[in-house]
Image (cartoon, rainbow, N blue to C red; front, side, top):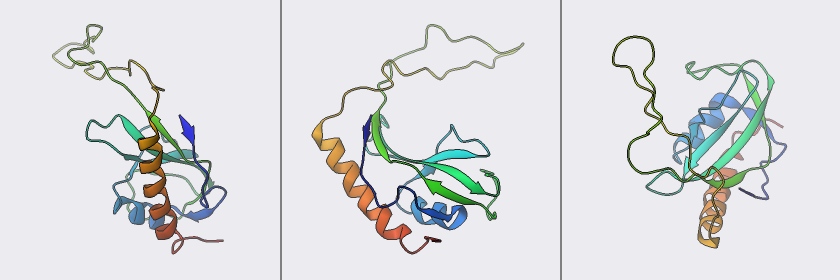
Amino acid sequence: MIPLTSQLEGRTIDFSAGRRELETLGFVLGGNWDYDHGSLDRPLDEKRQVWLRLPFDVVSGKLDAEAEAQDTEIRFGTPYVLRHVYEEGLDEDAVPFGSGGVLDQFQDPADPDAPLSAHWREMAEIVLREAERRLGRATAE
């Protein structure tokens, strides 16, 4: 994980407007969100191992991933780029849930904080600068 310097850090914006704007750049609401915090994530590679993450805390309202419009303001933390390396092939530790054929097929990363080359940092900074530019329009100071 490599922290990145950003104009977004400490900025407060309307979540819905910011999310819509960032979706045009390929960002999605990260799966680790909760009602009071989360992140907007963008894969930087085709294998979806290198990610630019924009973490945030909810400062008013509550986060709801399913709601199209909501009265929620978020404050960004320090953006960072990270790399998750996953094992290829089947998960030998997969276990069925309950009765039937439901299987947990998702593997934990083999290395959740794998090393990153300078190339990925540069790519993340290019995407981050574009996100800053676009969110400049959605900032609610």
